[in-house]
Length: 130
Image 1 (cartoon, helix red, strand yellow):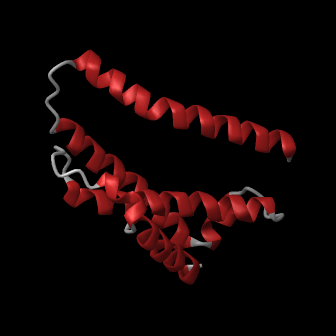
Image 2: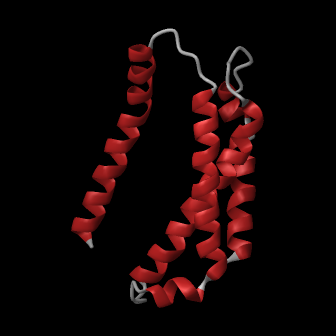
Image 3: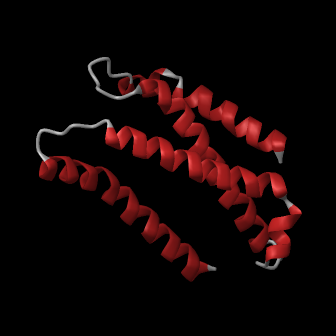
C-alpha cells in the first residue's frame, strides 16, 4: 500500500507540476501558497483512507471495526489528514477579510456546488449500478 500511495503522489506531482496547470500559479493572488502543498498532502491522505476501505469493502471484506484495526497506518492517515486539513482551512478562513460577505459566500458556493453535484450524481449512479 505504501508503494501505491507513493506512486500516486509522484504522479500527482508530475501532472500538477506540468505546464497544463501553470494557470494556477497566479502571482497576484492573496493565497497563502506555502500551505497549498500541505493541504494537498492532507487531502490526499483522506482520499487514500477512503479508497482503501472502499476497495476492501467492494472485494468482500465486511464493514466492521475489525477491518479498521487491520490497517492502522491507513486509519491514522485518515484521522491525521482530516484533523490537520480542517485546522489549516480554519486558519486560512480566519485570515480572510472580504469586502463583501455575500459576495464571498457566493464565490464559495459557485466554487463548491458544481463539483459537489457532479460527485453526488456519480456516487448515486455508481450505487445504482452496483
